[in-house]
Structure formats: structure tokens, C-alpha cells
Image (cartoon, rainbow, N blue to C red; front, top):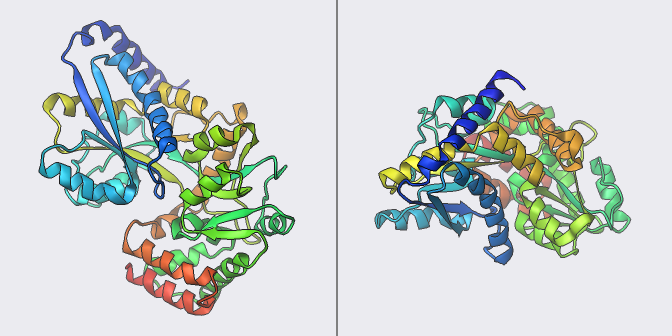
Length: 409
């Protein structure tokens, strides 16, 4: 244990020693708006899953601040902006918003959340490479990173004894009868561009730089693979990640791409039959997982006591002991605290997440150049839909995709 981790544990011990004083302080209710998965509908399963996640954190926080209670409200990602705008007009906005990094930045730009004041403790206990993903160009911090959910493969071990390690093997297991599902959404299927070595070319286009003939050919080759894959037996493209998760949980699919935030829910449905693995590589490169970074953003309508406790909770979530324990309990995420080592040897799940994180790091700069949340991403998805269904052709789609990326819209 290094000095920084020891210091973090000491802070927890000191805080625990003062619990008796805190327990007599004024009761504080924190209202938390939590975004469910990007494509999820709000159901009993998503509500149960969300409350399990939040309770893991809140129950520990309440040992330090027993006077604090948390009320959770779930929102679909696509509806959050409008809901917060409406509630803010009536001064009824939440104290904290739990969402992904891209949306947290969008909320701050729109003035629907407040920038997070960064403490020395949170700065030291947050991986600087992760922290940059929630900082705007003007320096404001859109939220406190909480956990990283790597993009992985989820599969039914009853149907597949071992997961495919390459794209060729993925097609082969489909041909042999396994039902394979992929999402047509750009952010969900972009990992295949890493496997086929097209990601650097896509990043070059996104930076508005000229592409060589070879780079254009690699983009066309990637799009050709997507179109041909959709013609393969038992491989089906679906509209979004939420559909894939539901179908695997219902045992109507055998292998899907997913993010590790779905592990707890899939575990409830599949039990010991759930397997996870890194995404398949290709002949020219490793997969490029598009990981999900969850953050806590500050609402605008808090009282002084609520704001103080909201910042305290945001500061608390990076505590090394909490991050380590939560990681071991859920085995579904990667800690954001750089001093917390992933216990890969203790869990097959955590070992798979660690490998997925390494693949993502390999492609980090190129993914950052493409990753977005707005017109560009939606436009790219709209280009892929007719492609995978054979309505448009790879060459024309490549030209349009390059043009859209270079324009940034």
C-alpha cells in the first residue's frame, strides 16, 4: 500500500470517528437523477439494477453521514435534458445527476448543471487520463468520474463453451448455430474498426486531415465487413444496445457486444451461464472498446446543506477503500482511482475487464478523436443502418462518412 492510499484510508478512519457528531446534525435529503443505459426503457429490472448500484455507494457514505438520505429518480438518457430544463424552471432540479461523461459535459454547456469544484483529494484520487474526459475546453469540470464500464462481449456459456477471440471466429460460431447480436449504433459497433485497422483512418478524417488512398480503402474495407457480416447466418444487427441485452437475458441470443454495466442485470437472468470476454480482435489489430464513463454532476437548485453534502458525496466516491470494495463486490467496473489495482487474479470478470481496458488504451487517442454525443454520432449511425441492410454500398457510405467526420456534423 503506497502513501497516497494510506492517507485516503486514514481520512476514512478520522471521518468514522466523528460519526456520532454528524448523526445529530440537520437531516439532509439529496435528490439524485440517474440516467439508465443509453437505450434502456425504465422497467422493474432497470429500477432494481439502478437502486442496487446507488445503494452500494450510499450505504457506505451514510456510515460517515448518517443524517443524509438519498432519493433516486430514473430518466431515459434522451429525455434528461428536457426534464432537467423543466424542473430547473420551477427550482426543483436534482442535487446530483448520475450520467455518462459526454452528457455531463452537454448539461454543463447548456447551463443545466453547475461545474464541480475540484478538491485536492479528488484530484489525487482520480486517474488524470480519465479526468480529462469530463473537463470542458474552458477548464470547468462537468462532474466527478465514478467508475469505468469497459465495452466487452457477453455470452451464454450454455450455448458457447468458449468465446470467439477473432472476428473470423465470431462468424464461424454464427455459422455453426450460435445466435450473434451486434448493435448498428456507431458508438456500439466502432470497436470493429479497431479490429480491422480502420480506426486510425476514421480519426484522421475526424481531425479534418487529408486521407491517403490506403486509409480510404481501410474505411471501405471495414464497412464491407459490416455489410457482409449482416448477411451471415445467425448474425443480426439490432437498433441499440438495450435490445441486445434484453435478448441475451431472455436466451434469444447467445453472444453480444455489451458494456459491463449490464453484468449485474444479465447475471440475474442467466446466473452462472453468463460469460464475459474481451471483444474479438482482427487480422490487423485489436478491438477498440468504447468504454462508458459514469460521473456525478452537480445540480443547480440545491440548498446550502444539499450542495455541501452533494460535493462531499462526489468527493467520497473516489476513496480507495470504497472503489476497491465496490469493484470486488460487483466485478463489473474498473475503478477511476489510479491507486486501486484491479484484482484480476481474484475474478475472471475483472480479468476480462482489465484486458478490455488495455485494448481501449491502445486506441485511446483515436477513439477520443471520434467519440462524441450529438449530430456527428447520430449521422454516422444513420449512415450505417442502410449499409448493413444492403440499401447503400460500402464505397459510397465511406465517402459520406469521411465527409461527415471532417465536417464534424
